Image: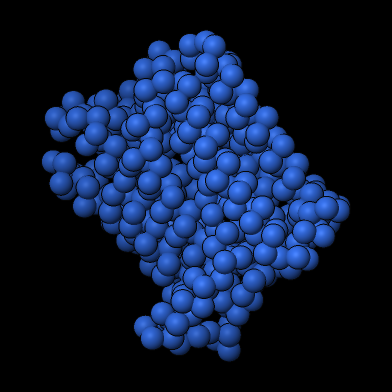
Length: 385
Protein backbone atom coordinates (compact mmCIF):
# COMPACT_ATOMS: atom_id res chain seq x y z
CA UNK A 1 0.00 0.00 0.00
CA UNK A 2 3.00 2.33 0.34
CA UNK A 3 3.14 3.09 -3.40
CA UNK A 4 -0.51 4.20 -3.72
CA UNK A 5 -0.27 6.13 -0.45
CA UNK A 6 2.72 8.05 -1.86
CA UNK A 7 0.59 9.34 -4.73
CA UNK A 8 -3.00 9.54 -3.56
CA UNK A 9 -2.60 10.93 -0.04
CA UNK A 10 -1.22 14.26 -1.18
CA UNK A 11 -3.35 14.79 -4.31
CA UNK A 12 -5.92 16.89 -2.37
CA UNK A 13 -3.04 19.12 -1.23
CA UNK A 14 -2.12 20.29 -4.73
CA UNK A 15 -3.77 23.76 -4.40
CA UNK A 16 -2.30 24.30 -0.91
CA UNK A 17 1.21 23.26 -1.99
CA UNK A 18 0.90 25.52 -5.04
CA UNK A 19 -0.02 28.50 -2.88
CA UNK A 20 2.66 27.80 -0.25
CA UNK A 21 5.55 27.24 -2.66
CA UNK A 22 4.26 29.52 -5.48
CA UNK A 23 3.94 26.71 -8.03
CA UNK A 24 2.01 26.47 -11.28
CA UNK A 25 -0.28 23.48 -12.02
CA UNK A 26 2.35 22.15 -14.45
CA UNK A 27 5.02 22.29 -11.73
CA UNK A 28 2.71 20.53 -9.28
CA UNK A 29 2.20 17.74 -11.80
CA UNK A 30 5.95 17.21 -11.84
CA UNK A 31 5.84 16.11 -8.19
CA UNK A 32 4.14 13.02 -9.60
CA UNK A 33 6.46 12.66 -12.59
CA UNK A 34 9.70 12.83 -10.55
CA UNK A 35 8.23 10.18 -8.26
CA UNK A 36 7.19 7.77 -11.01
CA UNK A 37 10.34 7.80 -13.15
CA UNK A 38 12.75 6.72 -10.36
CA UNK A 39 10.01 4.36 -9.14
CA UNK A 40 10.07 2.77 -12.61
CA UNK A 41 13.87 2.61 -12.88
CA UNK A 42 14.32 1.09 -9.43
CA UNK A 43 11.76 -1.63 -10.10
CA UNK A 44 14.41 -3.08 -12.44
CA UNK A 45 16.66 -3.57 -9.41
CA UNK A 46 14.36 -4.40 -6.47
CA UNK A 47 13.59 -7.90 -7.69
CA UNK A 48 17.13 -8.54 -8.87
CA UNK A 49 18.59 -7.42 -5.56
CA UNK A 50 16.14 -9.72 -3.77
CA UNK A 51 17.23 -12.61 -6.02
CA UNK A 52 20.82 -12.00 -4.87
CA UNK A 53 20.54 -10.85 -1.25
CA UNK A 54 17.15 -12.17 -0.14
CA UNK A 55 13.67 -10.73 -0.04
CA UNK A 56 13.71 -9.55 3.57
CA UNK A 57 16.84 -7.30 3.57
CA UNK A 58 15.77 -5.47 0.41
CA UNK A 59 12.36 -4.63 1.87
CA UNK A 60 13.79 -3.48 5.22
CA UNK A 61 16.43 -1.20 3.67
CA UNK A 62 13.92 0.32 1.28
CA UNK A 63 11.54 1.15 4.13
CA UNK A 64 14.35 2.94 5.98
CA UNK A 65 15.16 5.04 2.89
CA UNK A 66 11.48 5.82 2.32
CA UNK A 67 10.97 6.98 5.91
CA UNK A 68 13.99 9.31 5.66
CA UNK A 69 12.75 10.72 2.33
CA UNK A 70 9.32 11.39 3.82
CA UNK A 71 10.92 13.34 6.68
CA UNK A 72 12.71 15.39 4.03
CA UNK A 73 9.38 16.18 2.34
CA UNK A 74 7.99 17.39 5.68
CA UNK A 75 10.74 19.98 6.02
CA UNK A 76 11.18 20.93 2.33
CA UNK A 77 11.07 24.71 2.10
CA UNK A 78 11.19 25.12 -1.69
CA UNK A 79 10.26 23.28 -4.88
CA UNK A 80 13.70 21.77 -5.71
CA UNK A 81 13.97 20.26 -2.22
CA UNK A 82 10.50 18.77 -2.48
CA UNK A 83 11.39 17.24 -5.86
CA UNK A 84 14.63 15.70 -4.52
CA UNK A 85 12.86 13.96 -1.66
CA UNK A 86 10.04 12.83 -3.96
CA UNK A 87 12.73 11.18 -6.12
CA UNK A 88 13.99 9.29 -3.06
CA UNK A 89 10.44 8.25 -2.21
CA UNK A 90 10.00 6.93 -5.73
CA UNK A 91 13.27 4.99 -5.59
CA UNK A 92 12.17 3.08 -2.48
CA UNK A 93 8.36 2.87 -2.56
CA UNK A 94 8.09 0.11 -5.19
CA UNK A 95 9.89 -2.60 -3.25
CA UNK A 96 6.76 -4.04 -1.67
CA UNK A 97 5.00 -4.38 -5.01
CA UNK A 98 7.94 -6.03 -6.79
CA UNK A 99 9.42 -8.20 -4.06
CA UNK A 100 5.99 -9.04 -2.68
CA UNK A 101 5.01 -10.76 -5.93
CA UNK A 102 8.21 -12.82 -5.81
CA UNK A 103 7.50 -13.79 -2.17
CA UNK A 104 4.04 -15.03 -3.15
CA UNK A 105 5.45 -17.16 -5.95
CA UNK A 106 8.25 -18.45 -3.67
CA UNK A 107 5.63 -19.67 -1.20
CA UNK A 108 2.64 -20.81 -3.30
CA UNK A 109 1.86 -22.39 -6.66
CA UNK A 110 -1.02 -22.56 -9.11
CA UNK A 111 -4.50 -21.72 -7.86
CA UNK A 112 -3.25 -20.96 -4.34
CA UNK A 113 -0.88 -18.33 -5.76
CA UNK A 114 -3.69 -16.77 -7.82
CA UNK A 115 -5.98 -16.63 -4.78
CA UNK A 116 -3.31 -14.96 -2.68
CA UNK A 117 -2.43 -12.56 -5.51
CA UNK A 118 -6.12 -11.63 -5.65
CA UNK A 119 -6.21 -11.07 -1.89
CA UNK A 120 -3.16 -8.83 -2.15
CA UNK A 121 -4.91 -6.88 -4.92
CA UNK A 122 -7.87 -6.34 -2.60
CA UNK A 123 -5.57 -5.07 0.18
CA UNK A 124 -3.62 -2.99 -2.35
CA UNK A 125 -6.92 -1.52 -3.51
CA UNK A 126 -7.74 -0.16 -0.06
CA UNK A 127 -4.94 2.40 -0.27
CA UNK A 128 -6.30 4.59 -3.11
CA UNK A 129 -9.71 4.60 -1.40
CA UNK A 130 -8.36 5.56 2.01
CA UNK A 131 -5.47 7.80 0.96
CA UNK A 132 -7.19 10.83 -0.65
CA UNK A 133 -9.88 10.91 2.02
CA UNK A 134 -7.27 10.81 4.78
CA UNK A 135 -5.13 13.31 2.87
CA UNK A 136 -8.06 15.72 2.57
CA UNK A 137 -8.76 15.58 6.31
CA UNK A 138 -5.07 15.98 7.22
CA UNK A 139 -4.89 18.98 4.89
CA UNK A 140 -7.94 20.57 6.49
CA UNK A 141 -6.75 19.96 10.05
CA UNK A 142 -2.98 20.50 9.93
CA UNK A 143 -1.88 21.61 6.44
CA UNK A 144 -0.17 19.76 3.60
CA UNK A 145 3.02 18.88 5.49
CA UNK A 146 0.97 16.65 7.79
CA UNK A 147 0.48 14.31 4.82
CA UNK A 148 4.20 13.55 4.75
CA UNK A 149 4.28 13.18 8.54
CA UNK A 150 1.66 10.46 8.08
CA UNK A 151 3.73 8.76 5.35
CA UNK A 152 6.77 8.80 7.65
CA UNK A 153 4.85 7.18 10.50
CA UNK A 154 3.29 4.61 8.16
CA UNK A 155 6.71 3.62 6.78
CA UNK A 156 8.10 3.25 10.30
CA UNK A 157 5.14 1.06 11.26
CA UNK A 158 5.74 -1.14 8.20
CA UNK A 159 9.43 -1.34 9.08
CA UNK A 160 8.69 -2.49 12.63
CA UNK A 161 6.14 -5.11 11.56
CA UNK A 162 8.32 -6.40 8.71
CA UNK A 163 11.34 -6.68 11.02
CA UNK A 164 9.30 -8.62 13.53
CA UNK A 165 7.11 -10.85 11.37
CA UNK A 166 8.33 -11.14 7.76
CA UNK A 167 10.21 -14.38 6.97
CA UNK A 168 12.87 -14.90 4.32
CA UNK A 169 11.38 -16.96 1.47
CA UNK A 170 14.38 -17.04 -0.88
CA UNK A 171 16.99 -19.52 0.47
CA UNK A 172 20.72 -19.03 0.09
CA UNK A 173 20.95 -22.05 -2.23
CA UNK A 174 18.64 -20.37 -4.76
CA UNK A 175 20.35 -16.98 -4.83
CA UNK A 176 22.23 -15.63 -7.79
CA UNK A 177 25.41 -13.52 -7.67
CA UNK A 178 24.86 -9.79 -8.07
CA UNK A 179 27.17 -8.85 -10.92
CA UNK A 180 26.53 -6.26 -13.60
CA UNK A 181 27.51 -8.37 -16.62
CA UNK A 182 25.30 -11.41 -15.77
CA UNK A 183 22.60 -8.98 -14.64
CA UNK A 184 22.64 -7.20 -17.99
CA UNK A 185 22.68 -10.56 -19.75
CA UNK A 186 19.65 -11.81 -17.86
CA UNK A 187 17.74 -8.59 -18.50
CA UNK A 188 18.63 -8.82 -22.16
CA UNK A 189 17.29 -12.38 -22.18
CA UNK A 190 14.00 -11.23 -20.66
CA UNK A 191 13.78 -8.12 -22.85
CA UNK A 192 14.12 -10.28 -25.97
CA UNK A 193 11.02 -12.26 -25.02
CA UNK A 194 8.12 -10.74 -26.98
CA UNK A 195 5.70 -12.81 -24.91
CA UNK A 196 6.93 -11.24 -21.66
CA UNK A 197 6.97 -7.72 -23.08
CA UNK A 198 3.43 -8.12 -24.37
CA UNK A 199 2.23 -9.33 -20.97
CA UNK A 200 3.98 -6.38 -19.32
CA UNK A 201 2.21 -4.04 -21.74
CA UNK A 202 -1.12 -5.78 -21.09
CA UNK A 203 -0.87 -5.11 -17.35
CA UNK A 204 0.45 -1.56 -17.77
CA UNK A 205 -2.09 -0.28 -20.30
CA UNK A 206 -5.07 -2.02 -18.71
CA UNK A 207 -4.11 -0.28 -15.47
CA UNK A 208 -3.46 2.96 -17.35
CA UNK A 209 -7.12 3.26 -18.35
CA UNK A 210 -7.95 3.39 -14.63
CA UNK A 211 -4.86 5.28 -13.50
CA UNK A 212 -5.50 8.28 -15.72
CA UNK A 213 -8.40 9.15 -13.41
CA UNK A 214 -6.19 8.72 -10.33
CA UNK A 215 -3.52 11.19 -11.46
CA UNK A 216 -6.16 13.53 -12.90
CA UNK A 217 -8.07 13.51 -9.60
CA UNK A 218 -7.33 17.16 -8.60
CA UNK A 219 -8.66 18.48 -11.93
CA UNK A 220 -11.49 15.91 -12.07
CA UNK A 221 -12.71 16.50 -8.50
CA UNK A 222 -12.09 20.23 -8.13
CA UNK A 223 -12.72 21.54 -11.66
CA UNK A 224 -15.01 19.06 -13.42
CA UNK A 225 -17.17 17.86 -10.52
CA UNK A 226 -16.95 21.07 -8.47
CA UNK A 227 -16.17 19.29 -5.16
CA UNK A 228 -13.78 20.23 -2.33
CA UNK A 229 -10.73 18.63 -0.69
CA UNK A 230 -12.87 16.53 1.66
CA UNK A 231 -14.93 15.02 -1.13
CA UNK A 232 -12.32 12.98 -3.01
CA UNK A 233 -14.13 9.91 -1.72
CA UNK A 234 -16.79 10.47 -4.40
CA UNK A 235 -14.21 9.36 -6.97
CA UNK A 236 -11.94 7.02 -5.04
CA UNK A 237 -14.34 4.94 -2.96
CA UNK A 238 -16.37 3.67 -5.97
CA UNK A 239 -13.19 3.22 -8.03
CA UNK A 240 -11.43 1.16 -5.41
CA UNK A 241 -14.62 -0.75 -4.62
CA UNK A 242 -14.39 -1.83 -8.26
CA UNK A 243 -10.78 -2.95 -7.76
CA UNK A 244 -11.74 -5.00 -4.73
CA UNK A 245 -14.74 -6.59 -6.47
CA UNK A 246 -12.58 -7.54 -9.45
CA UNK A 247 -9.87 -9.00 -7.23
CA UNK A 248 -12.46 -10.96 -5.25
CA UNK A 249 -13.88 -12.38 -8.49
CA UNK A 250 -10.38 -13.32 -9.63
CA UNK A 251 -9.88 -15.30 -6.44
CA UNK A 252 -13.22 -17.06 -6.93
CA UNK A 253 -12.34 -17.87 -10.55
CA UNK A 254 -9.04 -19.51 -9.56
CA UNK A 255 -9.16 -23.21 -10.44
CA UNK A 256 -12.66 -22.89 -11.92
CA UNK A 257 -12.26 -20.59 -14.92
CA UNK A 258 -9.24 -20.70 -17.23
CA UNK A 259 -6.96 -17.62 -17.34
CA UNK A 260 -7.87 -17.04 -21.00
CA UNK A 261 -11.59 -17.05 -20.31
CA UNK A 262 -11.02 -14.81 -17.27
CA UNK A 263 -9.28 -12.28 -19.50
CA UNK A 264 -12.14 -12.46 -22.01
CA UNK A 265 -14.70 -11.66 -19.32
CA UNK A 266 -12.49 -8.88 -17.97
CA UNK A 267 -12.18 -7.20 -21.37
CA UNK A 268 -15.94 -7.36 -21.93
CA UNK A 269 -16.39 -5.51 -18.63
CA UNK A 270 -13.72 -2.90 -19.40
CA UNK A 271 -14.91 -2.18 -22.94
CA UNK A 272 -18.51 -1.85 -21.73
CA UNK A 273 -17.40 0.69 -19.12
CA UNK A 274 -15.30 2.63 -21.64
CA UNK A 275 -18.16 2.73 -24.17
CA UNK A 276 -20.57 4.12 -21.58
CA UNK A 277 -17.94 6.63 -20.44
CA UNK A 278 -17.38 7.99 -23.95
CA UNK A 279 -21.10 8.13 -24.71
CA UNK A 280 -21.95 9.99 -21.52
CA UNK A 281 -18.95 12.31 -21.89
CA UNK A 282 -20.06 13.24 -25.42
CA UNK A 283 -23.64 13.98 -24.40
CA UNK A 284 -23.48 15.57 -20.94
CA UNK A 285 -21.27 17.54 -18.57
CA UNK A 286 -19.42 15.68 -15.79
CA UNK A 287 -21.73 14.92 -12.87
CA UNK A 288 -22.24 12.42 -10.07
CA UNK A 289 -22.76 9.50 -10.22
CA UNK A 290 -22.54 9.03 -14.00
CA UNK A 291 -18.96 10.26 -14.42
CA UNK A 292 -17.72 7.96 -11.66
CA UNK A 293 -19.74 4.82 -12.40
CA UNK A 294 -17.76 3.79 -15.52
CA UNK A 295 -14.48 4.18 -13.59
CA UNK A 296 -15.83 1.71 -11.01
CA UNK A 297 -16.98 -0.79 -13.65
CA UNK A 298 -13.69 -0.49 -15.53
CA UNK A 299 -11.79 -1.15 -12.29
CA UNK A 300 -13.68 -4.43 -11.83
CA UNK A 301 -12.45 -5.72 -15.18
CA UNK A 302 -8.93 -4.40 -14.67
CA UNK A 303 -8.55 -6.06 -11.27
CA UNK A 304 -10.10 -9.29 -12.55
CA UNK A 305 -7.47 -9.50 -15.30
CA UNK A 306 -4.33 -8.42 -13.43
CA UNK A 307 -3.60 -11.49 -11.21
CA UNK A 308 -3.96 -13.93 -14.11
CA UNK A 309 -1.70 -11.94 -16.45
CA UNK A 310 0.88 -11.43 -13.69
CA UNK A 311 1.08 -15.14 -12.86
CA UNK A 312 1.36 -16.08 -16.55
CA UNK A 313 4.31 -13.67 -16.83
CA UNK A 314 6.04 -15.02 -13.70
CA UNK A 315 5.88 -18.55 -15.11
CA UNK A 316 7.79 -17.64 -18.30
CA UNK A 317 11.17 -17.54 -16.49
CA UNK A 318 10.91 -19.59 -13.27
CA UNK A 319 14.60 -19.09 -12.39
CA UNK A 320 14.29 -15.30 -12.63
CA UNK A 321 10.96 -14.54 -10.97
CA UNK A 322 12.35 -11.57 -9.06
CA UNK A 323 13.77 -10.09 -12.25
CA UNK A 324 10.55 -10.83 -14.15
CA UNK A 325 8.58 -9.08 -11.43
CA UNK A 326 11.00 -6.15 -11.72
CA UNK A 327 10.42 -5.91 -15.46
CA UNK A 328 6.66 -6.05 -14.94
CA UNK A 329 6.96 -3.26 -12.38
CA UNK A 330 9.23 -1.19 -14.61
CA UNK A 331 6.91 -1.23 -17.62
CA UNK A 332 3.92 -0.61 -15.34
CA UNK A 333 5.58 2.31 -13.54
CA UNK A 334 7.18 3.84 -16.64
CA UNK A 335 3.81 3.83 -18.38
CA UNK A 336 2.24 5.39 -15.27
CA UNK A 337 4.91 8.10 -15.32
CA UNK A 338 4.11 8.96 -18.94
CA UNK A 339 0.40 9.07 -18.10
CA UNK A 340 1.01 11.32 -15.07
CA UNK A 341 3.51 13.66 -16.71
CA UNK A 342 2.27 13.93 -20.29
CA UNK A 343 -1.13 12.37 -20.96
CA UNK A 344 -3.07 13.53 -17.89
CA UNK A 345 -2.21 17.25 -18.30
CA UNK A 346 -3.43 17.08 -21.90
CA UNK A 347 -6.70 15.26 -21.18
CA UNK A 348 -7.85 16.28 -17.68
CA UNK A 349 -9.60 19.48 -18.79
CA UNK A 350 -12.83 17.72 -19.80
CA UNK A 351 -14.85 14.59 -19.21
CA UNK A 352 -14.88 13.45 -22.84
CA UNK A 353 -11.09 13.68 -23.27
CA UNK A 354 -10.55 11.64 -20.11
CA UNK A 355 -13.04 9.04 -21.37
CA UNK A 356 -11.24 8.85 -24.72
CA UNK A 357 -7.94 8.50 -22.88
CA UNK A 358 -9.30 5.56 -20.89
CA UNK A 359 -10.53 3.91 -24.09
CA UNK A 360 -7.28 4.43 -25.99
CA UNK A 361 -5.16 2.94 -23.21
CA UNK A 362 -7.55 -0.01 -22.96
CA UNK A 363 -7.29 -0.68 -26.70
CA UNK A 364 -3.50 -0.86 -26.46
CA UNK A 365 -3.72 -3.23 -23.49
CA UNK A 366 -6.18 -5.51 -25.30
CA UNK A 367 -4.08 -5.50 -28.47
CA UNK A 368 -1.06 -6.56 -26.40
CA UNK A 369 -2.99 -9.51 -24.93
CA UNK A 370 -4.25 -10.60 -28.36
CA UNK A 371 -0.71 -10.41 -29.73
CA UNK A 372 0.50 -12.60 -26.86
CA UNK A 373 -2.20 -15.16 -27.66
CA UNK A 374 -1.12 -15.15 -31.29
CA UNK A 375 2.50 -15.86 -30.28
CA UNK A 376 1.55 -18.59 -27.77
CA UNK A 377 -0.49 -21.33 -29.49
CA UNK A 378 -1.22 -23.10 -26.20
CA UNK A 379 -2.65 -19.89 -24.78
CA UNK A 380 -5.07 -19.63 -27.72
CA UNK A 381 -6.50 -23.03 -26.77
CA UNK A 382 -6.80 -21.88 -23.16
CA UNK A 383 -8.52 -18.65 -24.21
CA UNK A 384 -11.09 -20.53 -26.28
CA UNK A 385 -11.99 -22.73 -23.31
